[in-house]
Image 1: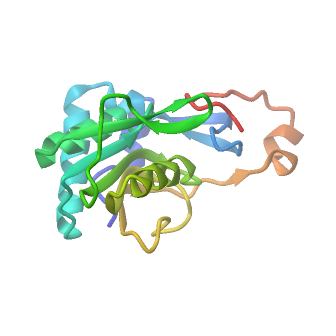
Image 2: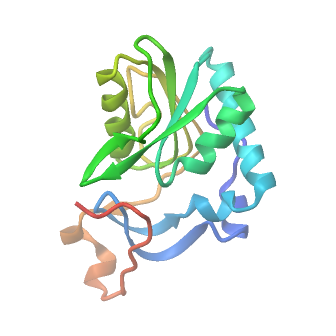
Length: 194
């Protein structure tokens, strides 16, 4: 499922930026989506969370808990959990590894969805899924504001939904046309490049 959010909305508020970017995946792109800029306005954040909650419900997914990776998934994860009236917990990066935030717990068998802001390679989301399944959770699906992975179901066989699918070119550094053209690069985002 895709719908409810447009690239025009993201561009208008400054969340879609053009230039030369080093993504947290290590890939290069001429387009960057900074969902935190969109989510900085509480009404927009609540709307996006409501839309994701509806998408999850439309997909027949009824989680007991919503989990999101910090930093990108924090606001949209919380807003989705609020719209679903479910508890929200998050993971964080500690000493290079993704871990469940101290003080939070998962019971074996609990139905969980993972909510993310932008999916490119899906690395953070897969790390969260691995943590949750290791704790015995039943991860039933994934939701994101933006899917830029190029795959309509990037976490198959788990179902996933996004409010917007985009197809921006990405490159590894040695093939980056912007690097070849000498365009200065910016490194937005919060995750260290590995």
